[in-house]
Amino acid sequence: MKQFFRFLTKHLKIAIVVIVGLIVVGIVVALTWYYAALQPASSSDTVRTFTIIGGEAPNTIADDLQSQGLIRSSTAFRLYLRLKGKRGSLIAGSYDLRPSYKATEIAEMLTSGVVSNTIITFIPGGTVADAKKVLLKAGYAQAEIDAAFSATYDHPVLAYKPASADLEGYIYGETYYFLKGTPVKDIIKRCLDELYQVVQENNLITKFNNQGLNLFQGITMASIVQREGGENLPGVAQVLLLRLKKGIPLGADPTYQYIADKLGVPRDPNLDNPYNTRLYPGLPPGPISTPGKAALLAVAQPANTDYLFFLSGDDNKTYFAHTDAEHQQNIIDHCKEKCQIL
Image 1 (cartoon, rainbow, N blue to C red):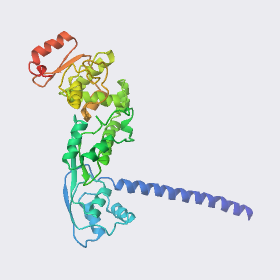
Image 2 (tube, rainbow, N blue to C red; image 1 turned 60 degrees about the vertical axis):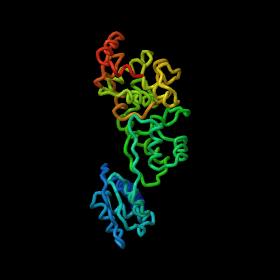
Image 3 (cartoon, one colour; image 1 turned 30 degrees about the vertical axis):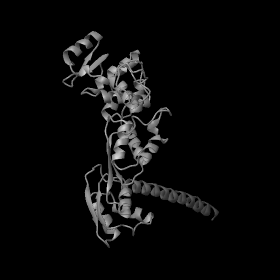
Image 4 (spheres, helix red, strand yellow; image 1 turned 180 degrees about the vertical axis):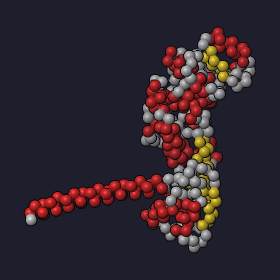
């Protein structure tokens, strides 16, 4: 009899462990599904007008959102409303929604009566000054904008950024959709998130390291490549990286132009400032613009060439050279107008 009870007790413990394990696994699976189901239905930014009729049941509204491709799961949406205590708070009206919104964002819109959104567009190659103008035009107060750009942010994409450096180079160029009244700080955080996603998806930290650059330096170099432009960004990046490696001044005109504009002084190629890469070897103190994805990838994977010079010709094509003599000939042959502009 004792052996039977020992046998029973042993297997009962095993059964309890198994049951508890299954419960834990079930909870993890359920939570994983729940949070995944609240993510955007798709990446589409196409506006879809969604209307709630007065007295319409929450379950019907949730089902309609799913059938119109605005949310992934009506079940998760209903659960979210219930957990937030907002199941009976859906407000009748017509809303401009996008499948790229999270279900949580849509829920907030439908329960707050927000029927309009703020559309913010930052462009690759833009500066902090440009971003501030965009936000000012969108209706934000200058005081809030300045405070947000002066704030300190704890974000992995800001690794290696000196504390003295501002957010130049980090306001990732993209069109963003925000609920009306979204704080500027939250807009900036979204830009940092977007930039970091590009960094992670393309393994840029490792690839920058392979070029002898940390993340901040890689973004700085990419910002110069962005402003130099042209149809061959990897080629431009190769020249600048090789000059940097050899200790030759980068000679990138957009750097002195950037600091001259920032200081409000005339654009002078002889401007005595660390940002002037005609006079000072190495990288400038920080980015001169926000680089787009193509410029970031160009620095991460430059062309497999060994040129030391390049120029953008009057025909907008990029011409490369190994020696200064070749470069001067390219100026004569291809840059009669552009190269006269400081």
